[in-house]
Image (cartoon, helix red, strand yellow):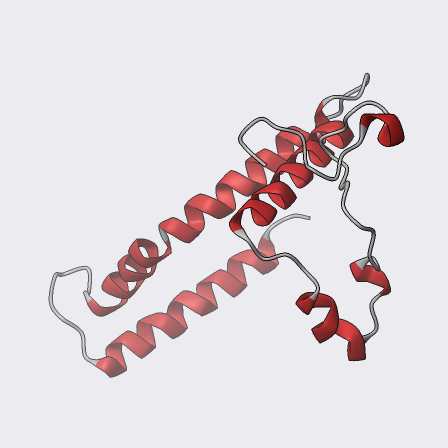
Length: 140
């Protein structure tokens, strides 16, 4: 299948108008109906080529589009989903920098002197205590 071509399993006489969210290959047992003893054989039957993975991602994209973005009455769900997805993505790519910042603040005191491990543990316990106390006093 080249770029922009229909899948080779698609037959307009049988399937009707093309839907990019539909899989036109041989139907198999849905993942939700697979028993635990059959998971290995179910994964072995999957096509793991790069074009098959891209096809699955494309179908997932179009299913999401049809369900949340393109209906007649669109709610706020797609905007919140994109917001949470982008927040998660940027958290993951900046995790190392944020964790080093947190560790640096534990090991360096406000006066600029280096703390010992015992001091760092004390600061960490004070930090946790303050987080717990402030969370208990916040209104619901």
